[in-house]
Length: 199
Image (cartoon, rainbow, N blue to C red; front, side):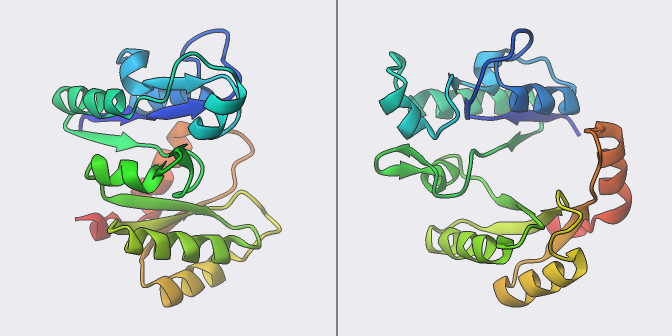
């Protein structure tokens, strides 16, 4: 499958080489794409905050431009069979005062996969996210558990709890890795994930 990637809004300290956003660089490398940065990441804010907050406190001349994101998504969609869009923060991260990630998901007409971690407190965050998605008319196709904490919530228990309470299937979990290895992660998806749920 020819997969394109997009991170509509990114924030943080700009990298000295490659894409400004480290997240965008990782996405592009994993998908093996070399699309122009302004297509993959239409807006980058040089401060680790939501677009709404960054625009207010960083004295940024460039304003948040949702229309640009929507236009670039259409352009990317013509270049690839499908597009993986990475969000920013949580589902209620403000892009504008009255425009959130939920609005962007709906405007892009996307189905969603929720990635959650195995730290204590994740059950609360994930349940609230699922409820807000449902309220916003967003369909969550599945949940992925990212095991970032070896001392955190037991993954098998978390899986059972999430499926029981949210009614959303857990597609699988990514085990803890000491360093990012795209090939290792790809192997996990091939062998440990129930991707039939996505059809």
